[in-house]
Length: 443
Image (cartoon, rainbow, N blue to C red):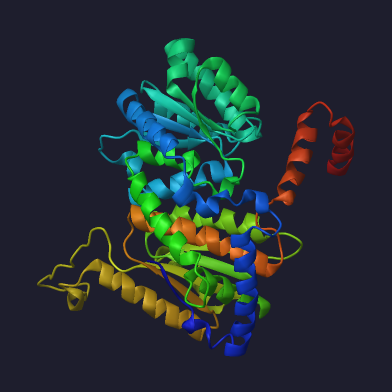
């Protein structure tokens, strides 16, 4: 199970300061598990590992099997929480090179997360002459980026397979009973999966939103749930040994001392999109009311050769959280060379994982000496069980941390501001007055 080490922050935060935050964390924990705080209508994820609809899970597995049989490519159309979790899971468990590998499962391509014509053109090129299916993910069906992508690729799939053939290849993950996408899916006969009403997008990895793409890529979704249920059992327990309490308390104690930027790092490149998912989870949950720790990320050791100087010597407003693994899925042993021209024979016979671990430890000590507090989140191995544990742990700790901070961790009022301006500038009906105002400001 996940272990959080916070003792290494004690040179930055006193015992009394940490204990004061633990008192607030305890109250936040009770608010979360009792459902008495703001956003209480969006807590379905807290018991999801135990309560998930197992009939739907079997339908997801069956749909994934059909997609694997019918298609060389699955297009996942979604934005934010509708794609980040799935992409994170696939790259974490399989490989950042999943789509380039020889395999018996389809490539999984993600689209609908931007408005770039060059990106979308590249996706069209990648599916040219290849059988493909679509998983469109949207609660409403009207979010601009995925709605545009679905319009484009729905047109393509209907041209290629006809309306009836396309309907068998389109899977909609959407609202259970309402919304534009649900209406279209019902009218066209797409198989649908539910986005639960009581779970927000960034907390939806362990729903059909993340599970269908994961199952298509060959991940063991049952093991993901097993890991998540283990984490649920641990995170629900009260007390200072709860890893979610430790993480929430350490980062909030540091925040109160002026450390307002948290950099999440990992020494495994496959963790990159886990960091992207984490950034959305914490940024959208905590960044409101002029509060919140700004979530950033680095990919180590690569970024030690680019961001390393700033991390070591820049503004001292940073804290680092590093995710480590006790063992890799596969290791590589360093060979000996007779000439030893690179001077690395002292490493001969050692596994690369051990060397990677010492790089982490040396860097942690250097950064702490440079004034950057570090928190370590250690896990067993990068497999599906650990994935489920990490997803649930980060979600639960986020809920506790948000309540400790004094915000609603389950809304996102600031997300709408850019949409109003975008719709106005695009000339959407009903935004005429706003359009004139913005055009004047733009000159």
